[in-house]
Length: 130
Image: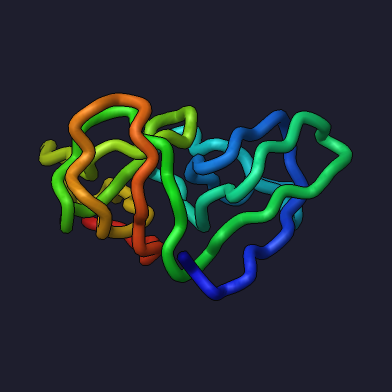
């Protein structure tokens, strides 16, 4: 649905299509699944790569398909689990919330997700809540 060309990145490990990725710390132009929601999300993979010697196309803007691991309401902010699967964004309201940030990848613009394993359209607008 997006008309913006994906950007090729190196991979640190096998990555599946339709997953949220983050830049790998200390390795230029390399992506991996997010270790936590404290790292900025940069996009959504558009293909599966099994070999670390290859590159993977990553949608960094526009609309991309995302594999969901939880239910999510249309129009809601979308976060990711440590496997890059979409989950509803939730800000950890703790005593350290003013210093800890939580990342989101964008907004679910497709129909509400009612089942784990659903692939739905997300408008990529990465950001942080503090």
